[in-house]
Length: 532
Image (cartoon, rainbow, N blue to C red; front, top):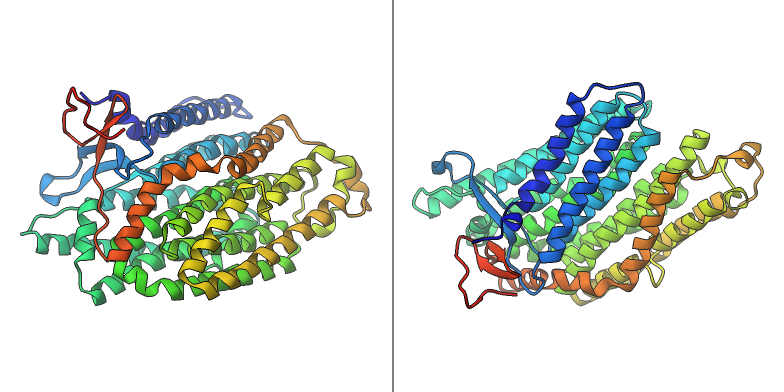
């Protein structure tokens, strides 16, 4: 029989944060809700431990969807089921989400001081929804989790954000609704078309819809591709759909900005899983113009970040630039570019997360995000300066950091697909180094000429733990990239094959038993003929 833990592990990862959130809501609160914060922290640590089960038992030489589970959900006639699974594309992103949830939860001890129970419950709801987005293999289930991520984000920004939080929330909401409607129309069309081509049998199984979408006439595939890609492109964001990002970063609470390194990757993941895999012919046709938009975002974001004086706005335009690299890697449509894009999703989350912690430190001590209010902090806060330099190294992609590996793979993939775009993208590397190094100089190594900066309280225990974890990850991702890339390779090769042949993306749901993979619902034989 199928290993029980492996069969239910993905559902457990989705449900467990909701149970912790319910416990937090039920327990009466005191003044600082210390007990509730401790429960939430322990809950996220347990969730991280659960996710390590995926890493331990995942079979790396397979492109199948592993730990798969199919359960009835809506009436059978609708063809809508609860289907989850992980492959080389989403495995690492699930682990990234659970790691960052622990890191973010440590931030709540100092940054969230009002309506604490509500914030903790919303955060755990968001963690559950993020995991759900990454592992869903039914398009209706995916859409439900996608929309569910937006609810806690709106409340976090609208309640715990800065003085202009209402404007930022409305702007984020408008962009989100536009993207969601575009995606919904495209998915409903695919769902209905599948029934027409299959004798009235409906299905929202993503693997079924891969075959349906790839068989559509190119004109139909093209407009569906544009609708889905625009929906995800707004949330990446791809230039010119970025205007919500600076306002959101500037007004959001510290915990959201830290977690945003994962949230933005939901859309980048969607570009691969849906835009590219559903519509391979259209993806090939539109790859070059999308890469051009991403290139504009890389250079524009870096140049505008260079001009900013508010560190959160620097991070917003820096993210636009870095995410442009990820989009170029995705639409290079080759294995090496896709590997670079996926790897850079992880690296950007780690380096941006470290920088957000460091910048939020400044705000909590001085109440300012302005560069002009700081300088020479290395003289009074040597450990702060140490962690800042490491984060800056990761951001500018110096050799020995994970970002170097990610950008190198992306540029190689871009050169293979579009040599001119690959060449111009290197300008983003140069400009990106300039604005980060200038910010590092002004904050860490500039003159210590403000009296308030001479008496800033140092890093607390939680901040040291957070920054230590992220600093280690910056270098681990630089020196130990091979195991991670090896886990992703079979799936990404499969994607490249689908694109090159304009054929449906082919995979299957599989269970794990004694370290072997078997197609779902097939009893493993004594001879162990599965994949290991």
